[in-house]
Image (tube, rainbow, N blue to C red):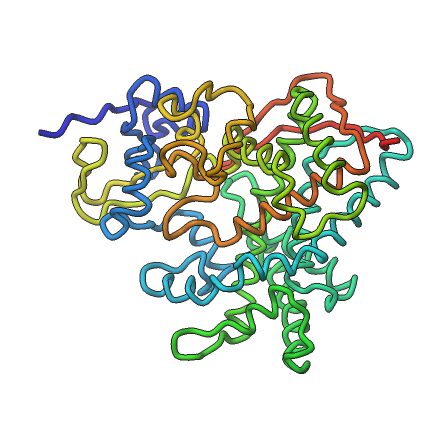
Length: 445
């Protein structure tokens, strides 16, 4: 016999929309258990599952019975990414995933380290000119957005993009991202999308034309070359339009998580001086003042652990796009009817008291064990990049980029909190981010 599902009551028409967020999801798990029903406007309510067993079932074990479902933001994404992997479903998604997977293996990612470092140093030099020399404080969050987008564009096009093309691509992606915001208060979204899309199409077309005119042996080892080298099971590659859609998808998917995570960590360092000291000591011991290389990354364990704990404690994507029960299914001992939307909140699962001791504490040491990917007994208790078949392709890229930035930053500067208030959070649709991160960088002697 199936137990009845606890239901969270909300307001007429709005349901729980005004409270819908990471803190709310966690509190509902405390009150109602690991499976509870919720109401949202537009028939977007359903059931939220928090226990790792049910998360695994929803994302992996029952992937044929619980499928990734269309959501209002999908129409916005489809305009920008066309037939790219972000909007694909079923067999078409599997085919494209298998094509793209080799481009994100460790060796290929390691080849991007010099490109990443060059952009990281460009940003740090810019911060030095604009803020450090005058001892001025600044909000780290927009700077981290600029960094992660810059690193992505350089990783896509490397040195083959002129400064003009680089700036044009960055502005185009910013416009496109603003047009995709799921909010009725952002006006002119169609115009922003069209401007951004046209500009990025021009840059991508120039890059692709130049690359195709260059002998493959002379191609730089960037992501654009990887896209051109991709082949399906029958040896066919992607056309230029499909490559442009995939490039756009990589920029959209890869920008926010890293920027938000770095912003959180920069805001947390002053509150955790012991963690800060361990990071600085490790960076000094491993690097000794020289630029990091791919070979150094495994030795920067404390940096990696601090980033992983930030992803757990302040999960940037606090909730995944919903799934839908394609058939009647059972989750957590509850009968879930066909057609029910199923929500998974990594934030709530990351704070599940059955799997995380002292879940509210920021403690990177919990990631010090041998299983650095998931330090607790259940792999699905930790899913900052998702799990299962739809594990984020760029998770290795993101961790590499963030590790390199923190290492390079701490080589040059002491990070100091410059705010009058404590670090505060806000929720923007499915993202959980700081309101602002006022810091000051003091050159290290």
